[in-house]
Figure (cartoon, rainbow over the protein chains, first blue to last red):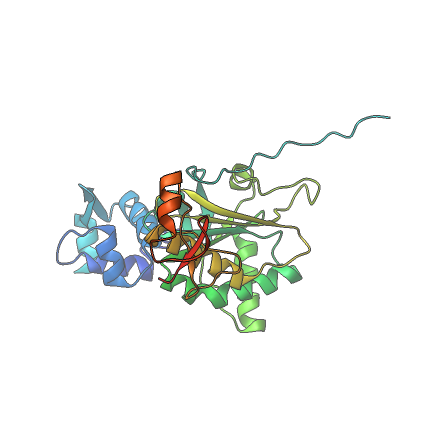
Length: 73
Length: 216
C-alpha cells in the first residue's frame, strides 16, 4: 500500500500527504502539487488514509482527523 | 473432422469509456478513475522475468520522463503476483541499473486482462499479449496497439502517437503518415461542395481540395 503499511501506520509517502494537510483542507490536486506525488497516487493514498481514520473528506477536500493530527503534531 | 473451438475475445472500442477497474498494483490499489485528468498508457506484458519484457520495461522506464512532460502516466499489467513484480523490478534495478518508476497491476485472476481483451488464446491461454491502450483524461480509449509475444514494442511510436492525439485535440486537425511534432498537419476535409470550392482559397498548402496541409 502506498500510504498505509500493513501494520496500520502511515508510510513515508502517507506521512508526506498528512503533513501537507497541516494548515488546512486541500483537494487531491493541491496535495499532489504540494508533495510532488503523482495525482493517481495521492487519490489512492487518500482512500487508504481515510479508511485508516487519518483523514476526513468533505466536498472533495481532505483534512486531518483527530488521529491524523496526533501523528503530524 | 471436428471443428476447432475458438474462444471469443472482447476488445475495447475506440472512443468509448475505458473499462473500469480496481486492481492491486506495486503502488497500492488503483482505480482507473485515479488517473482522471491525466492521459494514461495502460500496457500489458506476457510475464515477469522474461527477456523481451525486460527490454520493454527498461525502454518504458526510459520514456517515463518524456511521458510526464505530456501529462501522461504509465501503468503496466501482467498475470503475475505483486511479489513477482517487486522481485523482477528489483532485479532489473540491480542488474540493469534501471529503476521502474511506474505501477504494475498484478492481474492474477485476469479480471482486467479480460476486460481489455489482452488474452489472445492463439498466442497464449495464460499470458497477456503486448497491448497498449492510450486513455485520455476523460477515461476514453483513444488508441490501441496489439503486438504478439515475440515482438517488442517501439517506444518512439508510443510517444509519437500521444503527440499526435494531443495535437489533434488541441488544434482540431489530423496528422498524416509518419507525422512527427513540427511537421505540417492535415486540415480536415471539406464536408460540402461549397466548402470544397472555398478550401483552395483559404491559404492552406493544398495538393487538391481534399488534401490540404498547414503548419501549426
